[in-house]
Length: 223
Image (cartoon, rainbow, N blue to C red; front, top):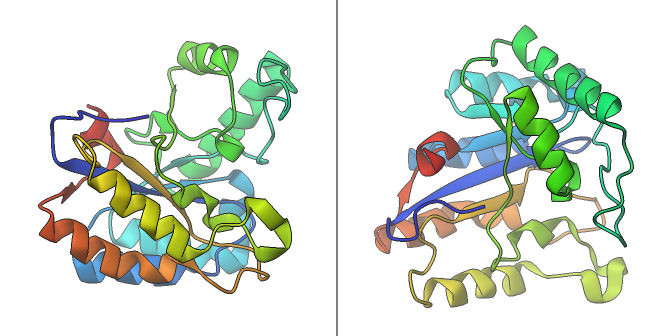
């Protein structure tokens, strides 16, 4: 969930399943800023024809791409994290299907890292993953960028982009700031959220570069 806290490096990671309204916007910003991102997409995303342009741009710009569950399964119970909602066989089948889709598109090389769907899992999922030769990762606690999926109708669970960004700069002021942080941003969000956080990505990158942070892909951060 974090790289070396003594190094001014961080990784931008992006997930996708059934939404990609900001996909090409994100990729354009990364290209303009000369930053490599790390993308984690479901098998369903990879099989969806309308998202193919996003996948092609990820490949063309040599970003890291790996798995996010084939069908975006919920592995653990929301109310009891230790309560599994999948069997070991179904988990293995789902993850391997996702990696097969990646392999078809030429992304199999050196992509042992993956993000479990919903970023919600337990120690048993970690153990099963390791048996398969994969390493589950997650965003670093302390930021709320992953809440960019929320929308006003969610009530207290909704976070505006102002609130999300404020939390990021508050964390930056703390000891070791954002060193080693894995920052998750969603490429696509519900249409009810008009306040799209990914539109702030460019200015965020500029400001972090002024703070002398180096952007690296997830393999470099966690090596």
